[in-house]
Image (cartoon, rainbow, N blue to C red; front, side, top):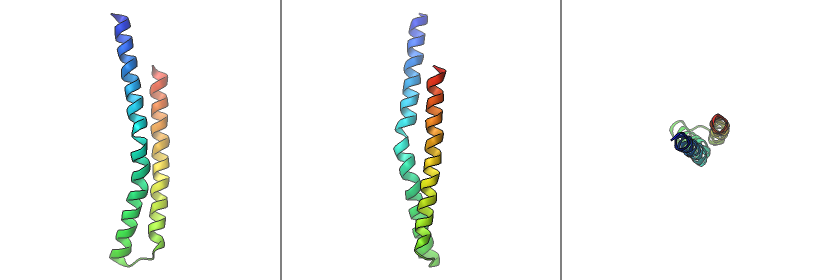
Length: 82
């Protein structure tokens, strides 16, 4: 019975790691897209210069990279716990 419980917890651990890592493409795409839409809105609404979009896209990309690092660290920590 104990072997079955260990095997089951190992499977759940790998499912958790797979779920965390499969979320990465969405995180990497959401930051720059959000920056683009926010910059485009500000350009149209307030007539700001065109480089504002580029600044927000860059900030979104930097935020996505930071969030990716957090997710990878969480996945590595979940792997070590098992």
